[in-house]
Length: 233
Image 1: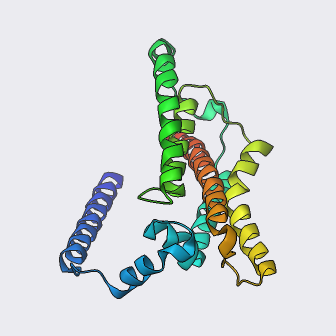
Image 2: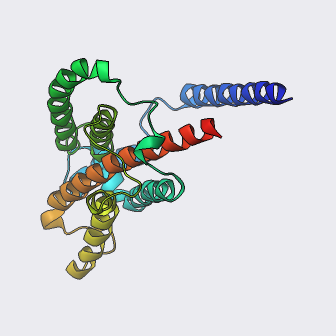
């Protein structure tokens, strides 16, 4: 009975993914080739946001509410994972690098980490002018942390330290703080002062990058412990 239920579940999941793929293909196929009015308006007013990239201008300036909610949702997901999962070291042996593989892991880390850090900083800097930004840079930063966890250079504990919690909350806290401070400059909420617009956006993106990286690391350690506990039950 259990095997039949698992097979039925797999079939349903695959069918749902197939329908999702067809839907995405249909949306992409029927999308208008010419630029929409919203895209043209964002491109025309991009200088008001203090950046040159229309994507960054829309995410942080024109539709800041949406981005703030996205950052908050990611933060709440990490909080939920911290509340449900446990990250004790003896609960997560499955993905750690074996002792005989550490000889190769150490030089790889020494080579890859500086490269990944450089790419992460570049994506953050490039977000003001071209494709890039806080989420892409934060993803690379999170991958760096996961690599260190796998190589046992970082160790997960039952409770995250104060430093990890500060890193986790840095993005949403900075986003909200800067948005509220703008009110004292006779601006609306999430409407930044024109004179320091680009600087404030860069500060927000920097802290969101750090927060995103911390969120990925916390989700990784907690998800590993949960999957291991399910197998042992």
